[in-house]
Length: 431
Image (cartoon, rainbow, N blue to C red; front, side, top):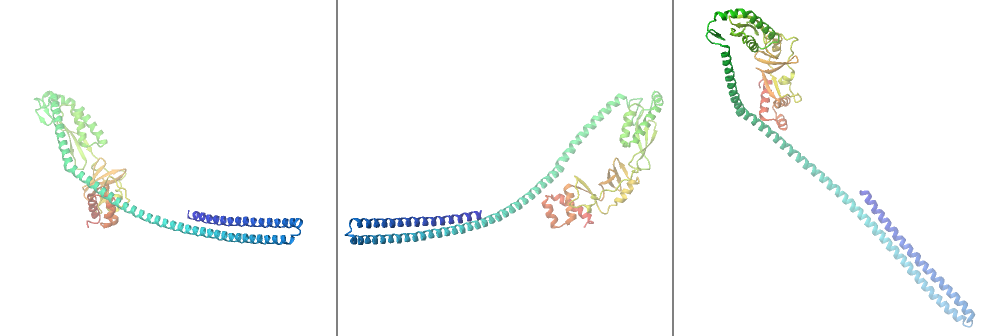
């Protein structure tokens, strides 16, 4: 833009100079033409006068000649005066044109200098504006970051207070309500049981209830003797079928009571008696105490096949960093825990199994896709998602101002920091 404006200014100055020179040239040409025409007409008049005087006034020739010579002399003087005036006019015109050209050039130069100065000042002003804008944006960004950090911390504190309030207020309230529901359910079931006993005539004279009562009558004894083989066979079949699918012992007893005991009124109850080996029971039908058979749960003596593998290294306290994937709940293992010994005991069948969980040495492990993972027990620490991320920061930077700065930026709550710091210290040997 600067170059185009300066070029236009120079072109304007050149055009003005050319117009001034053209004007002077045209004026000089017109004055010269006028002077030449006047001299030619004067000569023609003088010649005609000489001819006329020669013919008409011969006698006065000399006098006339002198007169005409005088006239011609005057005309020549006039012509010379006109030429002089024309020359002076030309000089004046040239001077005027030169002045105009100089003035135009000076004006162009001044305009050019002014334009350059204005452009330079405009650039300086633009640069100053950019610097000011950058500074303001930086200030606003830092201020916004501080506000966001404060807002995150405030939200985390509110959530923490909400959880604390829920633990102090809501959970006891829920427990109270659940307790009331539990008592209502218990009363309902007790009422149903009492009605069932009345319907089955349990505890009436001549009948023996579930846990003892009046002695059997001859009729009852005969009925029992006739039905006993079928009852034992049915109970054994149910026990064997449930043992194959590892039904929990309380559930097995419930099935026997619901399907066999309810059919034969002389059966008092079914019970499972533990054996010396963990997880092994003998199931008994209590009428005159008949053993139904052996029953084994996978909680003891069960050997996994194929053997289960050790927990993933992400559960080790010192293996977590800022890039480790965090889950909603994460159980961490202290360095001193004999995980290899626990895994060996589980694979040797020395752990108590309940479904997909194993209890060994006071610690509980879960199992997923053939891999064990820690749940609870001595040397295990549970961390939520935030505390797990904080542990990764402490493992990288330690308990330092840099770690605190990073946790401030991600809005970590004080409770999560303290939990993670305690676990990190446990990973350092309790230092």
